[in-house]
Amino acid sequence: MPRTITISPVTRIEGHASITIKLDDRGAVADARFHVNEFRGFEKFCEGRLLWEMGGITSRICGICPTSHLITSAKAGDDILAVTIPETAEKLRRLITLAQWLQSHALSFFHLSSPDFLLGFDAPPETRNIFGLAAHDPDFARRGIRLRKFGQHVIEVLGSRRIHTPWAVAGGVREPFSEEGRTDLLAWIPEAKESARYALDLYHRLQDKLARDIPNFGNFRSLFVGLVADDGALEYYGGNLRIMDGAGNVIADRLDPRDYHTYFGEATEEWSYLKFPYYRPMGYPQGMYRVGPLARLNICDYIETPLAEEERKRFKQLGGGVESVNNSFQYHYARLIELLFCVEKIEQLLQDPAIVGTHVRARAMINRRRGIGFCEAPRGTLFHDYEVNEDGVLQKVNLVIATAQNNLALNRTVHQLAARYLEGTDITEGLLNRIEAGIRCFDPCLSCSTHAIGSMPMHVRLLGPGGVTLAEIRR
Amino acid sequence: MTHPLVIGCGNTIRGDDAAGIRAAQLVGTEEPGVDVVTVHGPVPDLAERCAGRPQVFFLDASTEAAGVTLRRVEASADFTPPGTHSLTPEAIAGLSRLLYGKPPEEFWVVEIPASDFSFGERLSVRTAQAVREAAGRVRALLRTG
Image: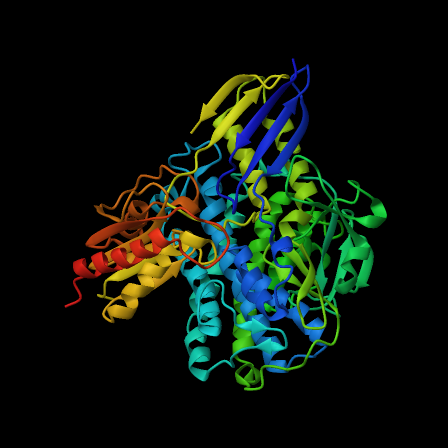
């Protein structure tokens, strides 16, 4: 008899989602769906607001990566004003973008994902969490907190607050950076660099322990999409789009991100509020692609900082040096390499005399009626597309979010894990956690905006063909 | 780091969800001897900030509280709610002990009644009154000498 298994909500991700696994008559996995059941509606209610408000509004989309939205919104504003922002402003924006990556990547690896690695996928859920982690390796847990704090501190020093800073604006940034701030932040670098190396060393040591599981975590060919610099370097703020296939072939390069809508379509499904972007030339759903750390590490030719570049070369060997690294589990490795890159690059930027320049904003009126901003957010390429009237009032808004671009691959990963680990009718803790861990490889951010005191239960249901509950598990 | 710490938790554009932040800021304005931090959610990072403090007040909106409630909680290693976003205040204090060996001497949870979480920066009348009451009750408990 066909059955449906529902996992709701998925835990230790940013936001709320559930999973449904459909079984066929033989009990094999017929389909698996990753549902996003929170609706935000930011695109709609931004209409009618002024362009200059958009940074403040869109940074509220998310409590984890507000700065990426802020920067992308400011870049869309630059496009509408038709200005080239001052050198110092661009460097400051780059600095805060890296800080955003750093704090987000630290949270993802140290606090959300590492309990699975360090304590084991089959460890009881009451110990497989931050407390279990703290008891198992307090130094590791403290390092995670400190790294994240460093990223947040950079954002706070630059933008006056840790989250939802309105610091970047169309044309540049509001305030120049100070010598005191620079000295303060440079003092954090040695410790941050050591912790990033520590995490990478730990990841390498864990490979043997996880060897049986790793091949099953979203291991399939897809396209990879992201920004690269003009010379092919890892890029996070500017550059152009590059698309690589799973075999490691660059199938499109130097694409202008402002034309994103010509390369990518957005399909919708009635069972999820999250859109399903795809690469238009290959159609839906064959045009599945992945963005974020795994994609960025696959598509770039090199990383401009020495320690991260050394690790990138090692990463590339996972694909034999030729193929793309197609295993989604290696998102974690790519994320840690980027973490190290962030620390190194932040240090370079802080040492750049231009970072404390005082000319930080270009001013202009509305010069274009449409503006497109883009950058690499921690989870992948982010686009803000605004249309305004002559007074700068938003007429239309389209936001293409990184997690949505991974939506097809997320669903494919869930399917693969369910097919591998579901045996008979037993919904084991190990199965549930591996599926959740598969999703966490992508570090999906579904935007958790409202917090109030309360708890979030884990709820799994087995449903028969008529929607009748056959079994139910809560934890 | 001997000042009391006041943590305001919430989202400032989701109506009453900002109650904890507003109350914490009010305390900070009126009491220069305290440190105030505002957060989007009770994340593990707070453990370091709380460690060794004589007093910590965690202020948050609550859909369940009938009025402003203050309760003193003890450090706990119980991780009942799954997910870092759902760390309880007790768990934050527990992490302070586990990771830094010094939980705050007093950890107070202040729940502020809230009902309207629609988009916007305006508090409902009832919650706005409760914010003022919560700030006053925190000030009455502060040991800033």
